[in-house]
Image (cartoon, rainbow, N blue to C red; front, side, top):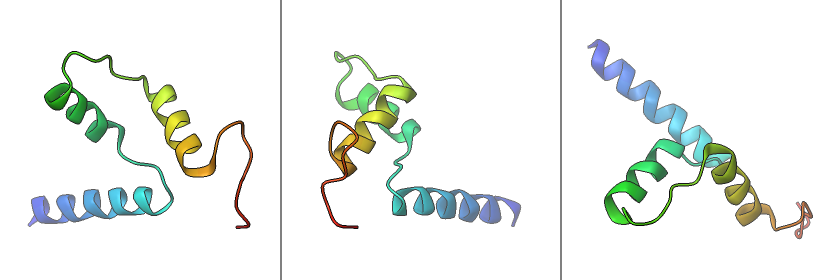
Amino acid sequence: MLIKITRAVRYLGQSMRLMVGVPEYSTYVAHMKTTHPDQPVMSYREFFRERQEARYGGNGKVTRCC
């Protein structure tokens, strides 16, 4: 029972982060290690910045109305 609750809370947290545009860094690291082992893995700071720029546009500008 406790395992099911823990799993549900984890999925809820992940869903909320994805709703606001912050993907899981640990998922990214696991993907890079299994799919692209020859490429370097970004640090959390680099990953976060890259995801923000991908979502909102580069140079800190918001290129949409809302």
